Length: 164
Image (cartoon, rainbow, N blue to C red; front, side):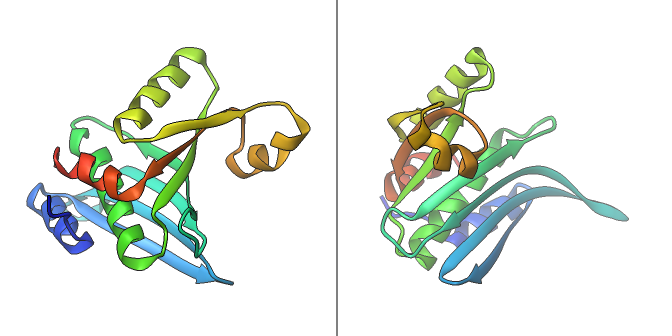
């Protein structure tokens, strides 16, 4: 399967009437990333439908994904576009080939839904992050307890681009 480029993913978003934008900043070898999908509106600012935030260290396993949010009606494609753009950007602009994220454990039912969702994207559990002293740095980074997961970026892009 040919993987779509970031430019091709942006074109797919535009064909659906959506704006897809990446904001990348670099400092001290760390790239911070914000991926946004919005719906244009006449004479108003675009309506934010979803975003993902993260950062990349210049390492094969350096992509760390933090906040993912999708909101509003008719946003089925928004999450897929965000994931595809994130994975394509990582493959094109960084040495990162795997990503980590934390499925936050706020409410048990929501946590199970997050884990199922991330598994569909190809993420696999690494370990639980809880109240242990060794978990404190991870809790500070991700803002809570949960299941730390890792996913292959190329496999993730393959999975999500099939559904775009």
